[in-house]
View (cartoon, rainbow, N blue to C red):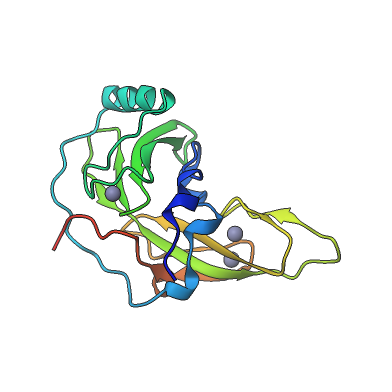
Amino acid sequence: MARSVANCVTLLGHGNDDVNPGPDCWAPSEREGGLVRRQMKTHSAYTESAWQRDEAQRLSGRRLTCPDCGSDQRYAPSAGTHPDGSPRHYRACKVCGFWQEADGTPAYRVWQSAHDCRRELGPAETFTCEYCNQDVSTNSHPCGKYLRPDEDGYDCGTCGDFQGIETSTPFLLTGSGD
Ligand SMILES: [Zn+2]
Ligand SMILES: [Zn+2]
Ligand SMILES: [Zn+2]
């Protein structure tokens, strides 16, 4: 079953995007193969002024196009926070995994980890999963996170399980590379 890009578009939110992929964007049942580390074509440096320009476009409602795969479906400038609390500006494409910080460093391709997240709920209990930002009212839900190329996984605090490379799930488009 193909993932619906349309459902994901509205979920291209702002804020801490890395941990907020949106409910319809994960398809654990499609998981196959391991993580493919492909060489991306070289992209020009992304700067803070370029980010400000992109952000103004995003706010004006104009769609931007991913410089790596050419899709405008789930590509946008994003804002988050560094571990030390300082603001982080970057651009991200959730169709191919193209990611680039607005600090002049080279672009990279994230990988997406997806899993069927299980946590036993009491009667009428609900919670917001802080890993996928969904409101959860069932004992299992599709959960996931985008990870940097050098990350081998993460601990999902909701189910308590480590999510490693084996949870890698392909992007809709492969983007540039070999
Ligand atoms: Zn892309
Ligand atoms: Zn989990
Ligand atoms: Zn979750």
